[in-house]
Image (cartoon, rainbow, N blue to C red; front, side, top):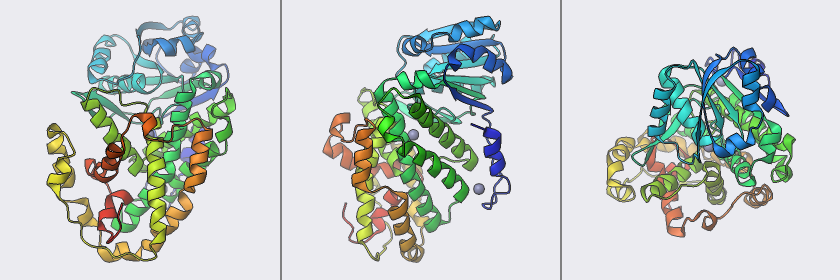
Length: 421
Ligand SMILES: [Zn+2]
Ligand SMILES: [Zn+2]
C-alpha cells in the first residue's frame, strides 16, 4: 500500500483541514516474516530493540527472530504465555525493562500491541508491529485502550512507525480472529451514518474524502466475504489493508469518527460491565459485529417515519447512573452534564430528517443481506453466542450512549416523539 500516495490524495482537501498521519511503512506480503530485519533497516528503525510477544504469536512467526539475527539486531525478547488483557501494569513493566533499548517491537495482535504502543509513546521511542492476525482496527491507531483497576481508558499515543504482516500467517490465523476483524470493519458502515448525523444536527466537523476512503476499504472486504473463513492470503491481506486504512483514516480526521459509531459504544458498554464482574470481555471485533446486527434493524426501522416530531431531551440522570458502577459515576456525570443533546437544534434535526434517512438507506447494508454476509464470514451474529442476555443487550442499546460525550443517532433517539425501541 502506497501511504505517501494516500496522503498526497488528501492535499488541499475541500473540508479545509490539513490531513497527515505518522505511519511510515506498511507492508502485508507473502513470506515477509523472514525479511523483517531487512524491512526494519530499510524503514530506518533502530537496531537495538525490545521485543514483546505471546506464545501463540511467536509460534506463528517462525523465521522472524532469525531475520533479525541475520541483520545484526541486538534485542531482548519478552514473551508472555497468553496476552488477553491489555493492562497498564504490564505496559509500565515494559516501559521500565526497555529503558536500555532504542525501539520497541510488538509481535502479535490487540493487547500485545496496546501495551507496547503506550510504553513506546511514554518513552518516546520508535514502535513497530508485526501483525499475526487481522483481528481489529487498532494496528495503525494512535491510542491505546488499557485496563487500569478494571476500567478501560484510551490513552493518546502515536501511530507505529512500521507495520508489517505476512499474508500467509494472517490467512492461517484462527477463523475467530479473522471474523472479528471482519466485524470491526463492517462497523464502518454505521460509523459513517453516525458521523453524518452529528454533522447534520450539530455541525460537527466532517470530511467526505475520508468517508470515501473508509467506504472503499470496507466495500473491498465486503466483496471478499466468501473467502474470510478459508486459508486465503489474498482475503486476509484485504482485511488487514482495510484495518490499516481505517486506522489511518482516524489520524486523517484526528478523531475516531471514521471508524466507530454507536455500535462501538454498545460494545464498550458490554465490555466494562463484563470486566467489572471479572469476566473476559471477548474479542473487540466480535462484540462490535454483534452490536451491528442489533443496531442495523433499529436504524432501518427509522425509514418508516416519513417525518418526525422532535422534543427536547428529558434526561433522567439517576436512571442512567443506576446502569453504571458507582466508581464510574464521576465520568458519566461529566459526559452528560450539560447534555450533548443541547447542541441539537430541534428544527434542524427535523429538517435534516430526509438526509438522515438517505444515509440510513444508502450507507447501511440491508439487514438481511448483512446477516448473511456476517454468517458467511464466520462471524457470531447473536447475543447468546457472546454470553449477553436480552436484558444486558437492551440496557446497552438504551444506556451506552451516555458513556461518551458524542452525538450518534442512537443518542438522539429519545428526542424523537413516539418512537419506541
Ligand atoms: Zn478532508
Ligand atoms: Zn474497532
